Amino acid sequence: MTDMSPEDAGGFEPVGDSLTAAGGPEFEPENVCRAAGLASLTGARPSLLEPVHHELSLLGFSDTALRGIPVTRDRFAVLEQPVALETGELYDAARVAIWNQVNENADRLSAQRFLVALLASTLERESIAAAVALLRTVNDDLTAAGMDLQLPAPFPVYPSNLFWESATSRSVDRNGWPPGDISASGWRGANWSDFVQANLAEMLGTEAWGRVWLLAAIRVLEGQRSDDPTTRELAASSRLVSASDDRPMPEPHVEPPPDSPNVSTLVHGTWGWKGDWWRPSGGFHRYILKDYRTNLYAGGARFSWSGAYSPRHRARAGQDFCDWAGEVAPRGLQTVLAHSYGAEVVGRAIIAGTRVSELALLSAPGTAFVNAAATMVGRTVDVRLPFDPVLSLARVPQRLDLSIPHRLVLTSWRLDHSATHDEQVWMNEAIGIRAGL
Image (cartoon, rainbow, N blue to C red):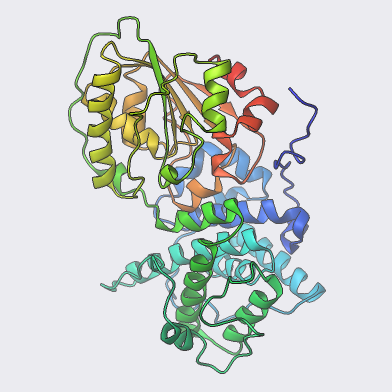
């Protein structure tokens, strides 16, 4: 244990005063979480956030807003009332006023105006969270309007110069921002803010609506290549959806309880195979092996999966995990620590017959597969952030079903979805001891 404060370790204490909506580096975490909360509250299932209503109230959300923000009849009036994007005190005051309107009226126009103001922020994480939330709401409104075309998630590669020229066709001042690579020199917040403001100047109605979506898509594309890991996590959430929640599950394959299982393992989440925390050479693996599970698997044929985001890839990975566990742990697995959508991979395997004594969920979405698996193991531990902006931007449940027996362990307030497999967080906040591992 150390005497490091949550703030020193990357955490924060939420402040709900509406004046914090004005912005500034000290209140960036609150505004990131507000953007993420609006992404879910403006969706078709605001009830997903019911388990974290208390946490959202600490961020300044009113009871009115927490009931959900439905699609308005005037679906294409995003900027019919212009967002004040001036700099300095007027801009700060405008953000506070719009945030207050969101909480007083829970109307979609105010929510989207607030997100547009955040999109134009000079702060990297604040801007990227707003960009993802705006992509969600634009697609919602197109669907509600009965349009067959669903705007796609941002392109997997950076757009061509022709695309960029289309995005900046209104003769705006780019402030030296290179059209071919807008992140070549790292994050330049002032340039980005000027770019957004110039693109939205004097634009109203559907024209502005399309331009907002385009700016948000450009921002997400840039954010995916950020030097900041948290920004990359927030940007990646634009490609996450909860489709698997609504798919029927196979009948559980019931096996007798494991007979003296002697193997534990780690499973990474979406796109997590690129990291090393779950590998025997990684810091978190070494930490769990040394302090909690001396039987943590460290052999050469360790399990990994593509990390690609789709139910098809997770289904295949679940079967692969079944096969892997059957070979390396024929008596069953003792503890499986699974991060994010890696928990659904493990859940699918458990439902298919893989025997697991203890399931430790790390920032896992509360999907149907994860909930079902949690009822089929001897013990479930749920380690997560008090409010996870990545899961909220992805519009997936942030808690397990409360009817399922499990131990909930919350970290300090943080923005990083990966904090639950960070050995420093575990040491500083006694996560393993609190989880009873």
